[in-house]
Image (cartoon, rainbow, N blue to C red; front, side, top):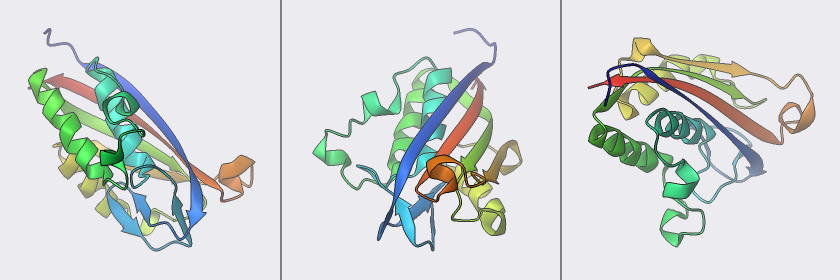
Length: 161
């Protein structure tokens, strides 16, 4: 494996449903609706795993953790992060930095932004000052702007261990 940096991008979209826990970046938010999904629906963690897996040249999250597998029903997305990091270690790679954007009307990330950075940093074994997360609204456009869905986009930079 060469020592050049590797970059990956991950994108994940989930509908929002009343009565679902609202998990974002491994943290539960108080919100009237949460992301639908076979697992806990954490779009940020799903996109982050896909970004890391892609940069490492590995299969995507849906291939590794099928929504057809009953073992993944209601599973915490943090489990997927730990499995992703174990695979990364077998490749002799580590996360150098991560940049995340969550498009949603609710919840508002700003009050808990540092907590989110620290959660992602812990899950992906990177210093918190190398993780960023930004919240964007949908400006009343499409399903995101109407509060019906959320979309996460994450870019991850990897390097050798």
